[in-house]
Length: 66
Length: 282
Image (cartoon, rainbow over all chains, first blue to last red; front, side, top):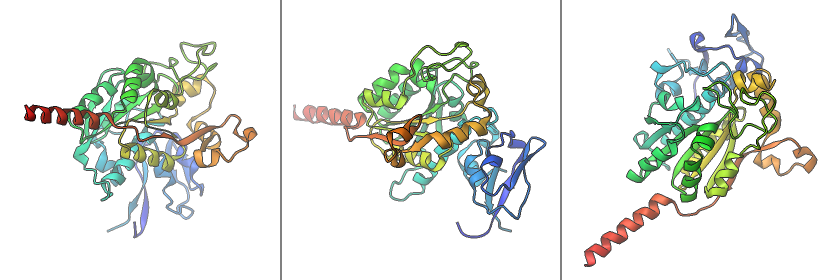
C-alpha cells in the first residue's frame, strides 16, 4: 500500500449514475456528457471513496508505476 | 483496464455488467470480492480460491455468479440454497456462498431458506435485497414495505414485509447480519464474518433499485437512495446508544445474531464415522 497512486477512469464502463460525484469528499469529480470526469486533479486526495462506491468499477486507484 | 481487484476476481470479458445505472448490486458484488480477497490473503484463515463456490438462483442479483471468477453455478429460481446444500454435503471443505435476491430467497426459495437455516448448514447466503423484483419489471416481493408501490401494487402494497434476517434467525440460522450499499466497509466486514462462521449465515444487504423501486416510490435517483441509507441505516454499535425517539424510523445494520449451534455437515460426518466404526466392530 505504499507508493504513489493515480486515479483511473474507464469511461466505457461508466453509466453516469453520479454516485462517485455525490460522495467525493473533495468535490473533485463531475459528470461530463453522462460520464465521470476528474474536474479538479489538485483537489483529489486519492482517498478511494469513488472506487469503493462505484457500482460499475469504472473509477479506481492504481499504483503509479512506470 | 479495470482495477487489480476486479481483474483478479471477475470475468472481465463479461463486464461491464447488465445492472442499471445506480443499481447497488455491483457494489455488493465488489464487497463479496473484497471480502474473499481479504480472506484468501489472510494466512490465518488460509482460504484458497479453489475452495470457494458461488451459487446463485434467478433474478438481477443472480447474474453475479456469472461475473465472479470462482467455481460458480447459476441455478434455477429459488433453488440456489438447495444446490448449495448438495455442494456443501458432497464436499464440506468448500466455502459455499449463495448470492440471491429478496424474491429468490424469501418467496420462490422461501422453504429452502428456512430449512437450510433450521439445519444450520454451513452456507453463507448473501441476499441482494432491493425490495422488489427488478428483472421481471418491478413486481412487489415479500420484503416490499407495506404501502409501497410496485407494478403489481399500483395503489400500495397490502402485505406486511418479511425481515429476511429475522426470518432466518427465527428458523435457526446461527449468524445473521444486515448491510447496505452506503456502509461499504461495514458490509465487507459482516460478509467476512459470515464466511468465517461455521454454521448457516444470512447477510441481508439492502441494495438500491432506482429503476423500479425508486421510480415507483418517488425515492429519487441512486444518489438520493444512498443518502437515505446514510441517514437512516445506523451501525449496531451506535444504534443501541440512541434514545427511543432518535431510533424512530431508523434501521439497524451490522451483525444481528450469533450462536455456536453445531453445523450440519460436521454433524453428518460424525454419523458417517460412527457407522464406519460400527461396521468395523462387526
